[in-house]
Length: 225
Image (cartoon, rainbow, N blue to C red; front, top):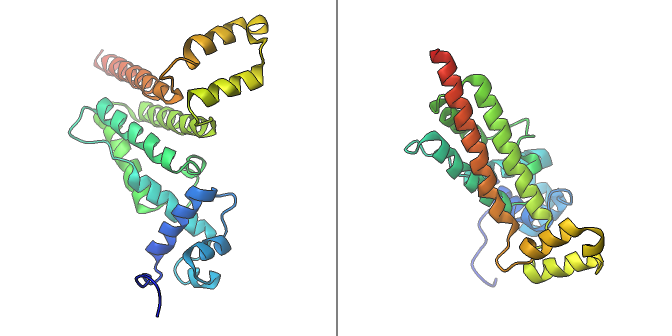
């Protein structure tokens, strides 16, 4: 007699979901087929019956992450739709902090990745952006989203007390004497109640989108002229 309900039979979907869960726990640098097999309680060779190898597993879990990101809604103006998509992307990447360096590196993209890119391009083109401006917009937006989430993942997450202790540990009691502007910024903003690095994300995103709207309008005016 076995304890608990019987396990679902191993499948490609179960391998990829297990791989996603494992990557969330340990990252991808320490990710191995052997560790995945242990997490799934199967023999390593069993996994190869469903996914050929580690690179294909990484392709699959990156595609799962793309599947979690909202596509830009067609019912919204293009900039609002892109804002929704970028905010959703940040949340997805926060859940999977190993993912940003891999999101655009796959040479065998899956259907969710391709669907996502097609929808983003359609949204930008719907906003009247030319092909060159669309290329600039996509590169800038994704560089911002991926870069912000990478930086966010590297910060301490213990709240104000941990940040205060870290600042004192790194900078020491003579902070104000040697680095007056850093001291004033830390005391007057970073250590204030409610401070969170992440609040800068949507502020920066809106600056980028506003700039793209201006560029698109100028481009349209130049064409009309």
